[in-house]
Amino acid sequence: MDGKTIGHKLRALRGEMDAKTVADALGISTSALFMYERGERIPRDQIKKRIAQYFGQSVEEIFFAE
Image (cartoon, rainbow, N blue to C red; front, top):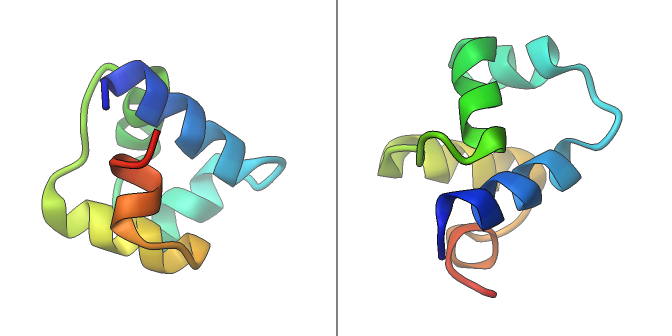
């Protein structure tokens, strides 16, 4: 799955939640979160796991299922 598609999924998952709140919970900077959401960067595996756990989904659902 390409970065843009992953970014759209991440943005949809965050919904109306504050970016700083989500970034803090994930242990990343807000700028990193925004780069993931814009498809400019793909999270490392460890961050993918944290994202999946935070949103209650599997890594596969978020990062590999189309």
